[in-house]
Length: 183
Image (cartoon, rainbow, N blue to C red):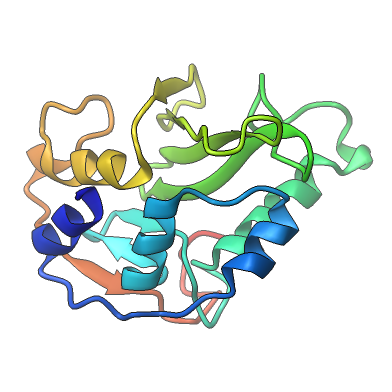
């Protein structure tokens, strides 16, 4: 239902991307949310409303979900950086554990993650924080509902962007990792 709302809101023609979900879920050690898989297959990776970055599949690196997660995990586990994590008080999810997995962000440095616990597969609250790197907001809703509310609900604060009248468009990732987009 929410995936269809995002498709209708953007006027997007679903791409019908196929993915080896068994391999992706296997690498993570947990199955990803079903509605995220639908978004991934419909949109791939790219930008909503010229400001909300969605990680899915991208021929380059900028919007590729697995690449972004692997980079985040590598940085989070780098002992040269000490015990500090960019997502404190959490850590980036490592297979079999509990932590955050990035799936989106904004041009204003807002960040969107799932809190994944390998012992509780199927429970994927969205954790988001605004550009100040402060407190995390938890949303017990699906990825697609959260994304829809960010794009369409001006009262969905502090993350709703509808109040800025940016339109509700989607542009697929360029495949160029050096185009100034997330990485």
